[in-house]
Length: 79
Image 1 (cartoon, rainbow, N blue to C red):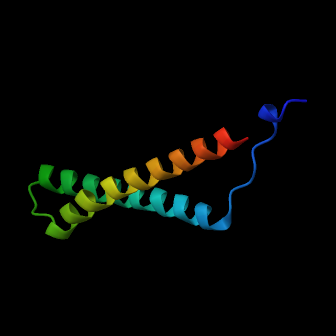
Image 2 (cartoon, helix red, strand yellow; image 1 turned 120 degrees about the horizontal axis):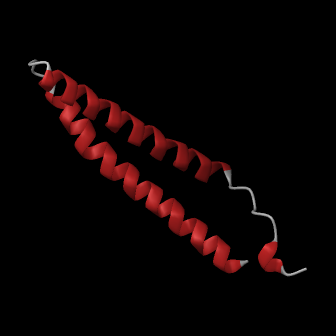
């Protein structure tokens, strides 16, 4: 049997925490963005911190997820 068709290896605990953190950042940013949009639509003035959360967390989560994908590709190439 060729080694290219072996089962995927489990991730280390550190990378799982990294991935869950990226997911939590993305969800937090999306919730903050929805709250800002809904409150603006309702005519209220949302807390400015919500804008900052969305502006910082979403790109950070995107970069973290990209790093995770690149790591997965590097692991696959070593098989």
